Length: 65
Image 1 (cartoon, rainbow, N blue to C red):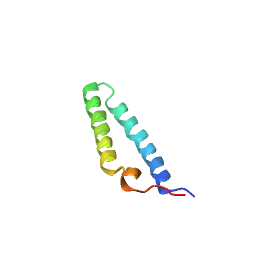
Image 2: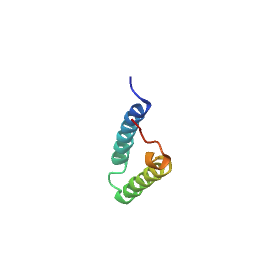
Image 3: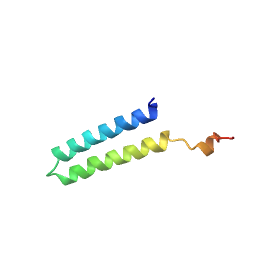
Image 4: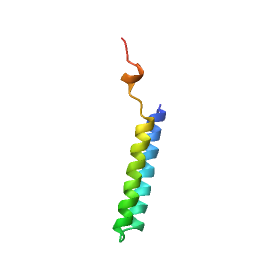
């Protein structure tokens, strides 16, 4: 059975490939705009990771056997 984490990883991989391919195809001659778009996508991904990633050691969710 597939977990939600695995399914969202596959959806993100597919969407990233589609969006990346479209951006590279549409803006192949305008590299300044391409750098701006890809930079903003990277910055937004870093912001999402910073806001929503949780460290298990900070929350106290350690596994005790």
